[in-house]
Image (cartoon, rainbow, N blue to C red; front, side, top):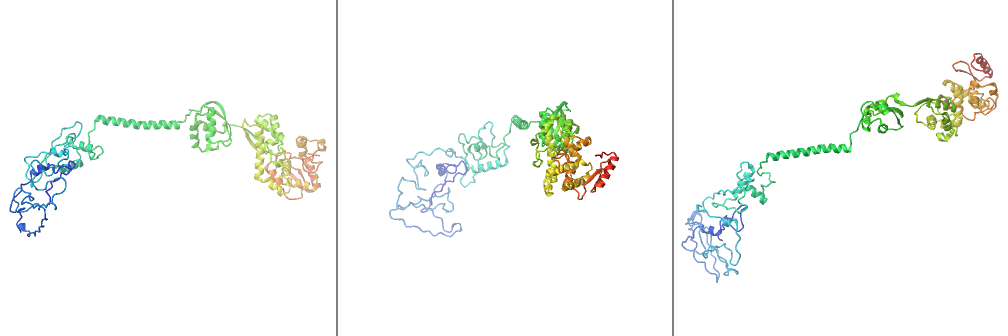
Length: 572
């Protein structure tokens, strides 16, 4: 058995060099005195405390090992007899004598005055001073068997601005941790003198310094009381930050997407704005902005997007006013009277010259410019089957031409209308199926167009023309001669009728060299699909333009006499 070991200090103030908060020599001095008795160790009587007598087995000392003197290695842990109970057993020196090296005190053996069994070995530097070396023994301390009672630490000087351990605002969790620390710091009747710079500080300050809790990051640490001024300043700074974010964000949005400007009212003055084919609402708005009608694109587009009728704005030139609001500009564009254009209606059966005269009259375009445009058919987009001939391919319809439309654009628009209609009718395919060319179909259609004004008669007139062509009989249609002479049919004289020429269908069989007018869709359909029969003649028989059709020449002559008698213009 070894010497009793002093109780070690527990807690964060423990030092590896000190025991139980008491210097070793002081602890030894407080130990009970050695009890002398009969024989070595003062053995306990057998049966003491109701326990059976132990069987003692003593080892025979080895040769050369010094004998343990009586009472030299046995001591008691109490100040007086304890009913014969030994607290420690015998200490057996190591076999073979002493251990090589510096002489070490034997536990329980007598030692020189002023020394201690736990003292440093001779020749070693002194042990550094620690917190436990400054512990003082209390005179009123009881014996070791008495209950150890923790004594309060001396109050450390207050540090300005730091909370004290006994601050009433301490959290419950903090008080519990401090109580645990106090339990660990109990010294059993010894007051602990704090080290300079640390022990004099409050407990929360020490924890913050040593990083073991209770610092700024410890949620259980005591709450500091904030100054009202600091709270106000923090709120002001926070409010300024929020205001900066709000107003800064608005400024950034304004920079990226600036607000759209807009004029107020209906505007004044007059300005023309052209809207092209395929323009979107944004395109229209930009055109209005460039003309000074509206201030910016946004208000007009916003108003147009909620107005379904805005999608129906037609291309053309519009009479607008300057400095109008977006909504007012939209309303004016939707008014049909605002659109500036020249509406021209080209009747069916008009010749090219008649078309040019009508365009010049309606659009105030010089007829010479129109004639110059008609003289260059290649620039007008004629289909290949037209053979470079403009006559018959200016489709009769109603057209709207803006003031800035050129003569070439006017004629090109009309040719485009014919091409569109012919494609829809499958003119080329049907002409080929009938064994005729497209040019022949258009020429026949132009004669049908000139001979009758009643749509229900057109297929019958086409039958007569094809029957006479098939039999080699001269068509005898005065409209071809009038076209060739540049006259109206009613202006023809007997001399004109006897004049030989390519367009005199009285003297020349077959079709004229070109169409003689612009046929409409009904005449084109009649030329493609005539009625079946053997009719060879027709004569005007009523003022409404109705004709008498017959295959007999005698009936034809009788009908001519009736027509002349009625003054319907049947002569010659």
